[in-house]
Length: 135
Image (tube, rainbow, N blue to C red; front, side):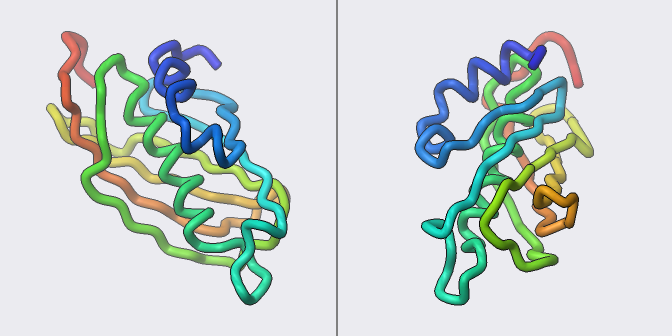
């Protein structure tokens, strides 16, 4: 990982640490995290709980929107569940779609270890501070 701002943000994320999420990479406006879902993360039908998938996508989103040296928080998020998830390794890859003044828009794809698209997440962030360098 090359982005110090993202690393500084991620090491302070207690919830990501609690879940066991690992940061694989981060660059300006982008982040990739991974997580191993076990049977403890399953819903009553045996699939990985949607809340777990949302949390993984939200963590990737949070890292991506905090890569530019300013503090940003989510102000809106939505998710589309595309394919049922079973226990195993999952990957969430976030990328910036738009970066204007204080608002940013990000898309996150969540896939399984075979590359099957499980969910697509869309998030909007609000920058609490604006750096001297623009997006």
